[in-house]
Image (cartoon, rainbow, N blue to C red; front, side):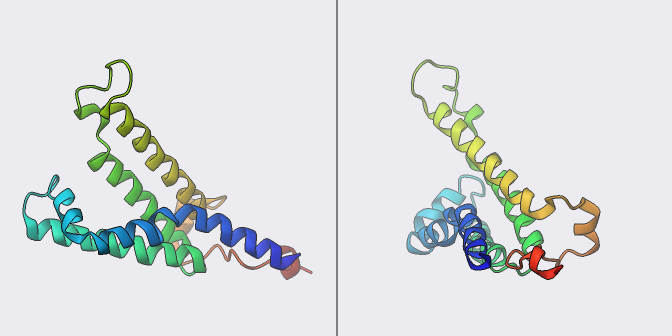
Length: 157
């Protein structure tokens, strides 16, 4: 029973991070030049765009590993929530396309759904960060873990 509970927990956590680790991170590595070009939409300097891309790559690799292993998973999930919200605001700007209110399919409508998906993912990550705990508890012990792979019922017996 405990083994199946652990597998379900791992699977659910992996569903939250699979977009980033390995897929988005791998895409950034394999298509680095194109990714830098996309980052230059926000930061025109190639050097600054490269640094921003490397920072994003580190977030997409390190934070999911924290979430999956349970090591400082609350902080890792909090960082991932922020990452999802920032990337939505920077690259999913549905309001800037000028065609959001046009009927039928439009670039703005597609970006709108991507924007909402990013914020929905952020909500899932915030559930790991806070769950039933308070913001103060994360601030007081930012490297704490939710201990996702321990059976609390077994520990209290």
